[in-house]
Length: 400
Image (cartoon, rainbow, N blue to C red):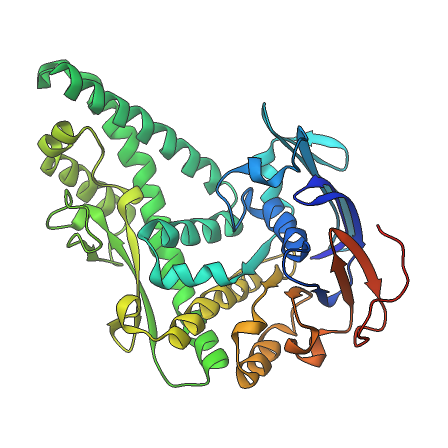
């Protein structure tokens, strides 16, 4: 899979932008705050329907504008595709493929990216919600139909929580909460599928993480991954980082559903007292260990950085191994500045075999030479094609 051309209108700091992309490595160079990351963020949005930097679409729309447009011309197995999304400040977003309207949630079927950025250090050191989003994004990239399952689960969870809060506020008795059972069954049905899929994908990802960590860090440390299920927790009503949940990769979907129902029974009174759903995939976590110790709290900064990078490289390898449409597009956003010379070379070796790699950097010399064959300089929201990437000053060229 290749992106041949990217066009933006009123996206972030770009009034308009047009840039041609090549197979292999594409490097965007410019000082901080010029718009390098905005370019790769737009492609990440097409494949995930979200930004790796902000939670709201509103921040993606240029100030004082009503909408932003991302348009990418793709080449996939010899077939040309024009993929477009209009992000609206009010009203629903709109999407097209080859000028035919589609639902925006269908966009990830047409483009697959794996993006690594400094923010991904939160995978190791951050909250469980960050790790859940990471796993679910991988599931959505591998099986886009699951995006609908995630959406359905969130809607059921919202309705169930609303009922629990209403019951708490009005003092309804158990007999008047008969509709809760209906929501319980739907919650179990959807939640069990999500948990089963998470267990399977983490199990499939683990060997790729081990290989990627060795490739990046060059050490014999052993990274491991385990899904932590809230439905198996000793005290699921607790809100701390370690609620006593257990890792269990041997449960099948029927076993998960049975455990889910039992957990709902166990916390029924606590849920009604607090007005919130206390167990389910929205409360799960993924435990990352390095040499059997939790990476969160024990791994050094360098080890955490290598682990986070290994997770993203492993995602790319997993998607590549299971894809009939070619490699995912690998995006490295401001990564090389954080690495020493040895690890820069190791990372270059790890990604140079992909069909297309997009890189952003503030300093050209931070990037290994084998990844600089097609370099574009960015200045104040202007894209400048740069045939001589090593020059101290950009060549004469018009703004896109």
